[in-house]
Image (cartoon, rainbow over all chains, first blue to last red; front, side, top):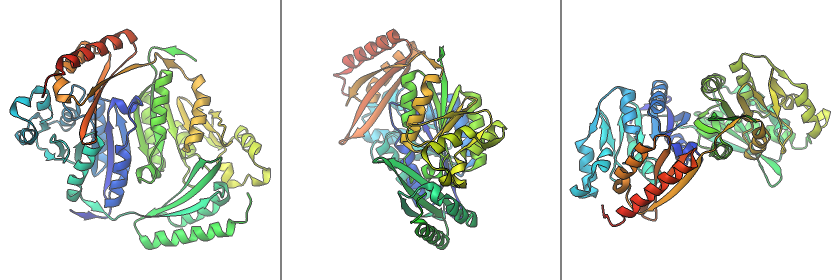
Length: 248
Length: 248
């Protein structure tokens, strides 16, 4: 939609099952990757449980700070699905059964099947736009700068695809990864710090991993100016070449 | 160490690489699972980037609310490793090279190898206890109720093992999972809500997943009173049995 220099976002994952360790959250990593590709800078993520006060506080803290807030989880038909009511409370708007959402649900089920629990999935805060998905008919919604999506990954992903074309986006981040391999971080840290200090507009990170009994390091340069990213990456490659025979 | 009715915690993941989508955070899920098993209730998780002000704000918000805060990431030797300095700033205490940490580093490297970058890994806020690990010699630390650990999963896990015996813990949560299979959430939602309303001290969640073209639902009952968890699980199993021939 709109193109700005920088568009920021936060992700808010809602669900006791993530905090209890039962479910490993796959949505936040998916959204992080997705937003980077379309030019939105993800600045923060939070996970809170199924507690209205916690959801309200997190939504309000995040929506005031960032251009967009993407929530996942808590919009199903069961008693623990309280996200829609919590978001309405955060915005201070009424919530009620939305005829557009009822219509969507009736595309998938017969009127006799639309029991009270399923009608809960049509509760939408006043002023929100629906966010449809291709898997279930139960919609998420978009109110203010908050986009409320399902927790089931396939449904969340479909909702994100529906929303993405309507989002304001900024310049995309370009990333270059330099393999440092088994060279110690402590060997290249000083030189890398100098490159970083000369390029304050770039994000330069050193990422060790430990496997097969040893460290394997990668350096990542990220930024919105492709030429500067390339120049910094070349400077780092040159640094590593100079250090290759250093043993410490 | 101490046994209390309830001990709460938050996890703070620090690192641009998680927000950019480059790295999928595996630490928070591991810690969630670990804390549940030892009787600590994880109440919130946050991910922030490598920005001192953000780390300070998150550490201070979380350490005031929860019994423990576990941080991961940002304690290596490179310029982007700023967690120790940020935590010192959050506590308003000085930070300097800690002789105990230098001693640990010298167990792994020769004095000539201990360059300025590596000495950064010995910067520890005043008043903190070191948290050792079995993989690298570079320590994390524990200050107040904040436990600062590495981002490399194998090192973080080793640090958590070192810290765990010293943590106050509460009653462990008992969990029972009931398979609802292909039965729709909307079919059992009303009955499940009644069981939940009768058991406000339990956390009862319904978790749909979508794969192989259909929904597969699980219901999880969690609580600290095993007898109540078992009774609620049996009530839910009876509910599902009554509904098994309901088609909607």
